[in-house]
Image 1 (cartoon, rainbow, N blue to C red):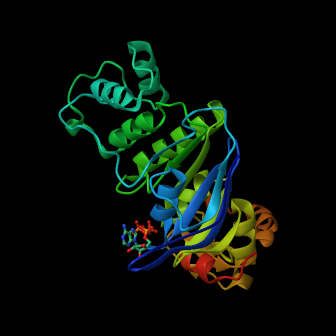
Image 2: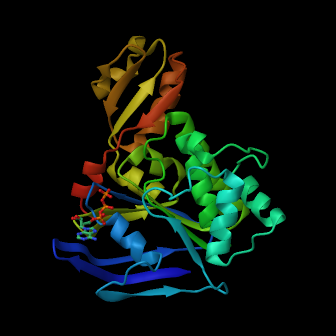
Image 3: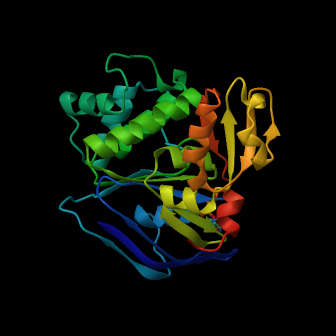
Length: 284
Ligand SMILES: Nc1ncnc2c1ncn2[C@@H]1O[C@H](COP(=O)(O)OP(=O)(O)OP(=O)(O)O)[C@@H](O)[C@H]1O
């Protein structure tokens, strides 16, 4: 287990991290949500051992010599080398296994081809992120921290990365912490969420708990949604194929049943939760 307790860090510009405590459990995917300047990167730098906190403790239970791997901001790659040579060079620099089989295994682990020979400057952003993760995995870490990994990816790239992260957690039993300022990506892949604002932890809980406590707005899509009578009591705001309603999360299963009885075929029901709601809400 990785436990960070009461971490604080100040720069000349002010306090970047203020009494932050978090935990990473084996195989768990945690999200760190916060606006720009909330202190996410500062926390990640401390977790990776790149900077020291002014106060607080970092305790890591692990048999491995380098238990934490990560990408802080963008992965720094050698653009003129191919993926294999990038990985091999980083493995040599880090003193990690660098024989062919091990390098290829790492490429396959992140879903990159082993036979692509062109330089990584030709790679899409999603492929560069995958290669960055492969570099972070070189030392076979138990804990992986990924700072803003979805930044700049298109929706297909985001979904592919979410699947990769889920695979690494379940198949390799790696504990993963991801940061983002976007709710949607984190709620799709994280078991637990931490919410930071101005250097402080302002909310936390399992993703399900946070959704249940804080979501009161849902977007329901169905082609004939406008003909629903039962929906009227929620004063829906109608769109072309859907309607937005305000209600508690626990009313949704019954409502979906009633809609089905009315012959309304619901194709999606999406909770609408914003970062602002979680930052401003009292702790659940
Ligand atoms: N090396 C540094 N020197 C001075 N101030 C810093 C340094 N690194 C971070 N800060 C300041 O600390 C605060 C937290 O920054 P940090 O980068 O940790 O936030 P963040 O949540 O990662 O933001 P972003 O999403 O914009 O990357 C900001 O006010 C930032 O300006």
